[in-house]
Length: 293
Ligand code: GLN
Image (cartoon, rainbow, N blue to C red; front, side, top):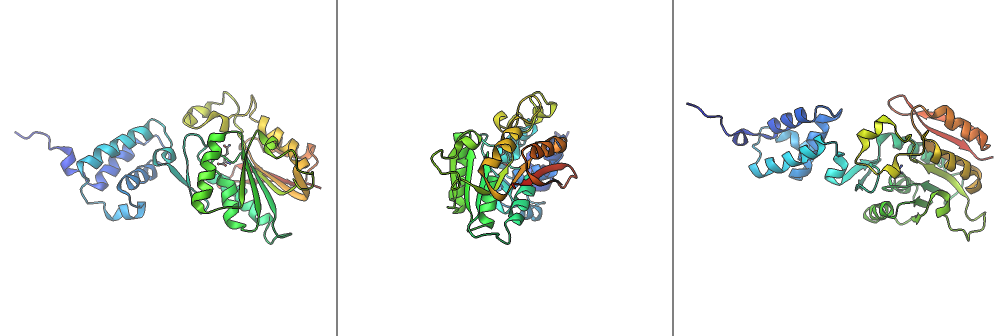
């Protein structure tokens, strides 16, 4: 009579990945998630994992992998489980104190860099309002070495993560300031000293009570929600930016896929010129910008 063979003995990297993918099937990125978690556990890359497909997985690794897959299956972002997320060309440390940087936010970085290349003037002044992990500020910083960059956040826990990222990347031309929106800026500066050539912001823009929030339960609510219509922070950023922009300076903000018209109206109301909305790779209106006259 044959008893069931111990599954662990037969487990290979390939079979374990396939089983994990099955358990994570409700995630749109099940295969990727399964691979990133196993590569992290084995201290290798996703590419190298493919070559190991037929190799047996040690029993101890199997149990540890099972624990990681269980966390992911409960909805925890892979970035929090492994402790990092790649954004732009950077690997950023992320913790539950910060929003996990999203690929669509690279649109804002790309647009901002293009506006300052070639430089209208050397040493442009750039601000990232609500920097979280530091994603936007640090991506701009590695591309524009002569820029002077200010990154703010209301959360000192988030700023600690962002500062840690700057220091791991050897970035020294970003200053981190704690405070609510533009209030983080030093009040003592003369108006002209405080003017920016480019202000970027990916503020919280989800409406309180939005059903999508249940998928984002692990991320800080303060980084996600923004009043009953999701536009509270966008109103504050767009309404407050003109006072901090140099003549001809640009404000670029990220927003929800259905907020393009409302955000363009905010820019128009605030007197911006050359107002334009750009779409993300999924084809959704995702970022709006305008130039200060
Ligand atoms: N600026 C950060 C990012 O884009 C954080 C944004 C936020 O917390 N809303 O990832």
